[in-house]
Length: 254
Image (tube, rainbow, N blue to C red; front, side):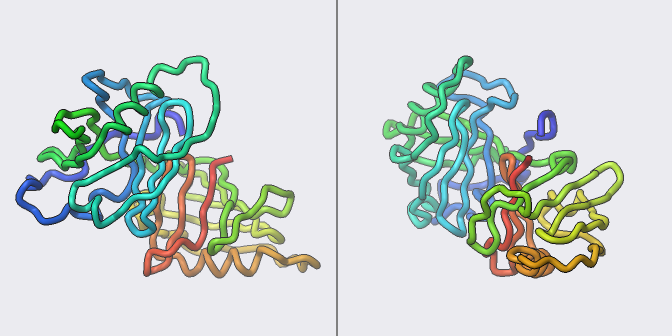
């Protein structure tokens, strides 16, 4: 996914946040790259720290420049501009080029206030109302989907990697998709501009007609794929959601 991410402002509208009773959940939803931490500008790269907010499930996730982050958020307080990231969990990898992790972790732990700016950026402030971090909404280019993606979750059921693990692959330049249902091969077309914009436009998908003795994934996978109404892009992941916003399928880049 290198080089496939672009930073853009979340909107062009002026947001009178200070006078609003609550922040717009749909604008906070998604992933935000750190562009400045404690006064230090962050150069965009694969090591760029980011925070992600799942407002439907009250979930917080991210990357501090070395380790993945996870936690929960109080959505009611969050929408009022109040934050507390001090209890985030993380993986425990040691990274040789660890130039952002400590800086990011300290700034996130100090954050107590959240503000949306007129340019669509997100600012975190400490208890003294000093800016500790500025973030810009991460927007995905269609090329972010290129390659193969393993299914890691079907309707809440975690899928362990194995020979019969379903996957989907995309050839963005050719508007083609292919994959494996857990039993049969599949091929089809897709509109990738619509997919990264949140609309699961996969066109017609065809499959081979093999009969498999242990069909533990195929039916569930195809039913979930056909029921998808929304797409949520993530860092090395994407999810297909139903019309209510519940996760049907989650994929991880191979």
